[in-house]
Image (cartoon, rainbow, N blue to C red):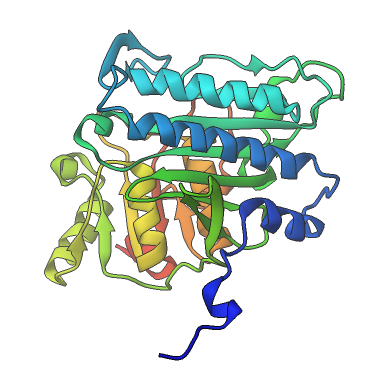
Length: 331
C-alpha cells in the first residue's frame, strides 16, 4: 500500500456557517455586519435547542407543561425552553430591537432600541412530536425595521408583508440538525457537526424540483377540505403518488424541498381562515420556497402578497414544487 499524501490524510472539513456568512456578506442588502451577527445568534440558539432535544428523554423536559400559549394550544416544556433560549440569544446579540413569537401574545422588546432588525419566529414547531422522537423544527423571519432607530419597535415593523423579509429560514432537528436559510440570493443548507460544534455547508444553492410525486396532507380532514383540494387528492391517488405526512411542518416542507412534492394545509369548516400562522410559519417558508424556485399560495394568490393585519393571523398554504402547486389550483 502506497503512503497517503498530506492532502489525503487531512481532508478539508468544509465551509463553516461563519465563513459562508463572511464570504457572502457583500450580497446582503445592508452589508454592515448586523445581519451576519443576527444569523450567527440564531445558529447559536439552534445549537442549544439541539442539545436540549437530544437529552429530552433523559431529563424531565419532555411532555406537556400544563399551560396553554396565546394560540390556546397546550405548551410542551420544550416550547417554553426554546422560546426562552431564542429570546435570550437575540437579546444578547444586540442586533434585534423586538421579537414576535408564537408563544407570546404581543411584541417582546429586547431593550436594544438601536437594533436594526425585528424577528418573527416559531421557536419549536411540531413540539408535540418530541415524545415519540419525530423531527421538529424552528422557523424564523427577519425584517429590517421601519420605525426610527433608538425608539421602541412598533406593530408596523412586523406587519410589513412577506415581500419585505430580508432573510428567513428554519432549523430542522432530526437524524441530523440542519439550518436552511436565504437572504434573498438563493437557499443554502448547513448540517451541524457535533464533534466540531459547527454548522457546515452541506446543501449549496438548493433548488426545488420542478415537479414531484409526493403530496403531504392530513387525509383525516379530507371531507372538510374545499372541493378543489378533494379533487386534487383524488387525482394524486389515481396516479399512485406517494403520500408522506409527518405532522411536523418543517420536516414535511424540507423533504419536499429536496425531493419534489407539495405540502397542503387547506382551510376547513372548523378553520376557514386556515390553521398555520402567516407571519412566522407561512411567510418564511414561502420565502424559502420562492428563492429556491418553488411556489407558495393560499388558494388565491402568492402567500408573500397577502397583506398582514394582525400578529397571529392564519392562512391556508399550498407550497412546494411549482408544477404541483399549479396543478392544485387547476382543479
